[in-house]
Image (cartoon, rainbow, N blue to C red):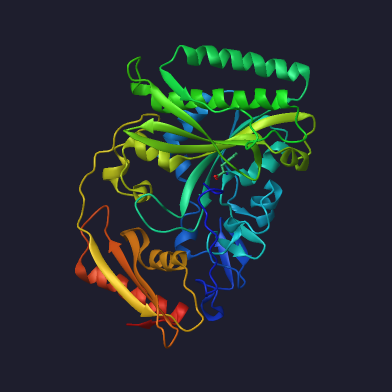
Length: 433
Ligand code: PHE
């Protein structure tokens, strides 16, 4: 999650495209041209994903999952056409992210230039949707984060944001109570066991501006709505003897309080599903919404789709192969049958970095993706040391190439590896060992 799994790391080194001679004057995104500058770190491989919008492709598992979630909130507005290009202000500041939040760094996020970035989460649109006057809405979108390469991380993924606000009046709270009563009654009849925590506590506090009674009721409504959603998504096989298990965990997000995470026990494991909380009043104030109190949640679609459809590698969502695509039909959750696992091919690369240069792992991964596209399955750092005399840093990475659709020839892999080495030399000035 944006706010819990980030470690403060900053690259001092050069970034892809930031070397003036290698940087194009502009990049084009969804038909718009944007001037580049030394901050630009979006790569061709990332930009090629922007128009695809998997969550709107007919029969795609991510689309089916989106509609399934939407069906749990039939009275909500269902939004899905917001551009991924946003200002850092909108992605972070409007949501009360501190100035030194690691998510803002160039190693964690993709910047188009110093004024614009690719959204890192769907929460980036909270203010504008509330400003439109929407009171209950779901928003689905592609989001972008720089990350390592493995079977469950991909720099583009899809999130859904959901939010609902109520009049902060006696009448408004009566409606919340009625809704809570209805949801509670339905859940009591279902095969679900909920491991709950208090709605408010000293470590997960009510906001100063909120009446604690209102905040309690809204947090309760949030929990009941999401427990109902978990039952819809994961409760298919639940029974009296084998109920669905859901647990609530205290969390922290800059733009909600109290805040929670939800986990579901599925296929023998606890899965982290979503983050949520009572919306910071500052967010609603910025949106010009007065006298309301509400909740919001954000969930990642890939992680859920991987377990529901049995999809073993996150790259498969991007596959154009009919053996993948033809297995799915709109609205149906079916188990993916792997058509074959093709052989992996490992290549190591060891190099010296120029003095006082720092290569962040995410820089390396973007460089590999630009050469290999989705033919790279996994990247691992094998070795990292600084020579005691020259003070130069030596790095060794192992790249695991594997196609999901076919066997790769030796020549093809060698060719890609050559490109990786070429890029390392031109973009980062390394000396191959
Ligand atoms: N935007 C958060 C994330 O990406 C999730 C979230 C959404 C949390 C809404 C609280 C409220 O991790």
